[in-house]
Image 1: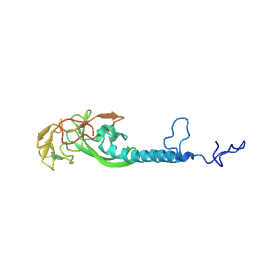
Image 2: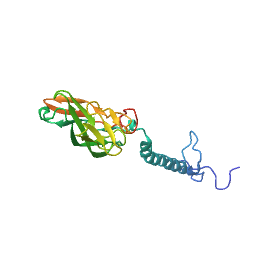
Image 3: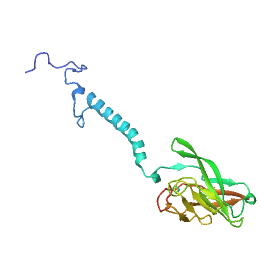
Image 4: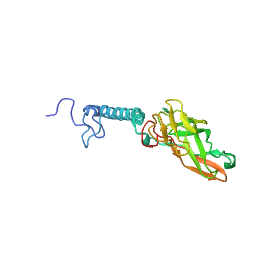
Length: 199
Ligand code: FES
């Protein structure tokens, strides 16, 4: 028996009295996905993307410094002519270094101490004390490096700790002479630890 008003449809007429697609909750295989299900999925994907965008900087904040890629021109020209540098007396050279960390560009004022015994071979030390990073000075009377923050002392020729709390020698940096100019490959290292680990 055919219910009243539900008789056979004329050819070419679509029966819209069936349950609309947007009531299909599970979107089972072979059936169209309901509008509400579709919207739920779209908003779920949006929420996941938002969470990822918020989460990535947070994760970066906790990531090891070795995972955070910083780039800069690490070879710095610190003297134009080796002939102009005193022998047996260290000289401090300051410079501004530009660092590119993802989208952030920063500039840092850094410095090195240069020292030569013979005018040919040069040593360069990072200008930060290995204890807590203060700038140290050359003590002309004692002929050593002196850090005023906690009275650390370092040997000029080797960078070795002579006194005070610094946990390791000064951080020595690679040096190259190119056409009589002095270049130093600058790097910073972790402070307050006995090992020389790049920061
Ligand atoms: S920062 Fe140099 S001795 Fe403490």
